[in-house]
Length: 134
Image: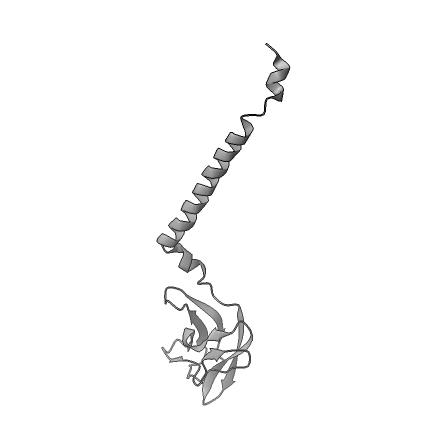
């Protein structure tokens, strides 16, 4: 038996690599299809926007949130709330961009004012900014 011939024989390499690639492709396709069937594909895109807000205090009128930079957000997805169960939104605009103010909202002394974002499908919400009132 010629042992050198065993080391030079490459005939089994191509079929083994082919089988490994087919199994890998099948597993990846199954994972992608499974994630969309189970609804995981939609929730991946429901991340909160990256934005900055400041609060404008106006004595008798209350407090308003001011978008100072970052991503633009649909006005229907944002609310400004206080612990007095008061809620206001951005009236008269469809998209909140830098420089856009919310309506003024009443607050108590040492109250917490929050800007809350809610995803389009309503499954996710997150506080984008919060601050104690003077």
